[in-house]
Amino acid sequence: VVVRPRPTRHRSFLGTSRVHWAVNPELLPGPGVNYNFGLAAGTPVESFFTLQRLLRLGRKPAQVVLEGWWVNIAKRNESTQWYAMLGPSEQRQLDGWRSTTRPWALADPASLEWPVTYFVPRWNPRFARTADKNNRFGWTAPERANHSAADLALHYQEVLQEHQGVVSTFPRKEQNLAAFRATLALCRKERIPCVVLMAPNSPAYRKALGGELWRKEAAFWSSLCKEFGATLLDLSEWGEDRDFLDGTHLRTAALPSYCRTLSERLGPIPAP
Image (cartoon, rainbow, N blue to C red; front, side, top):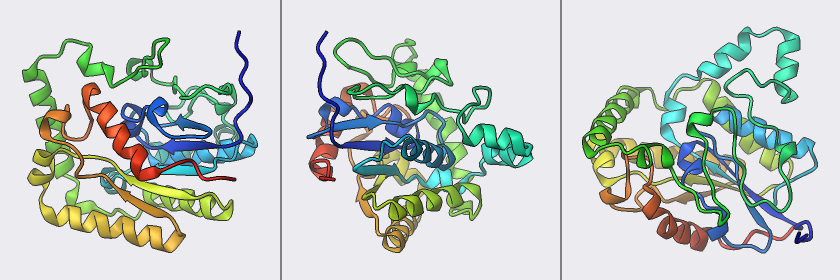
């Protein structure tokens, strides 16, 4: 058994499946450790609870990379609607991360072992990231389920249709936006450098949704970053159509190149 010293600093990635299946911590710079806390079907609410829980555990990140995705701010958050319907005791239970029956109840970060370099949320085993002894992982759901090109094309059209249906509601000033702002405010309060990451979208997807949306999204995140003292990292135009499965999720083969770009743009983990 090789015992390595506990790292003095770490960077936490928070976001959706676009973080969960695309960020390989082994390819990102140190010194220190990068943790991937991205969650399939995640929302800004889960990101806020994750950071809040890490701070309560005394594991303050040296930097937070928080995914900013227009879809999450355009759609209504069902999880927070359910949260509002819970009784006080259930809300306290959720806030304390003791619940395991709700979709937003992540595996407790207290189970995170140092110096593990990534974190696997376990609430949805169908979409759980898989890793072998060499820490290789990727978005395995469609690529290892032998989905045909026709299946993926159909999925892309379904995603595109769904997203086209919420373009007009961006930004929706409701729960998701409030949770995103709360996460930025928490970083500012705790003096944690925060990077808002605009993850890649395929050229075809961007073209289908129109340039006005992307100009609006860039201005939206830029304004929030300015308000809360965060840094905007715009990688939304990274990659070619062949690098994507459905317009918003990268293929496994594209991850090394993407992570190299992410590594170069982020730089080393900030010193405490």
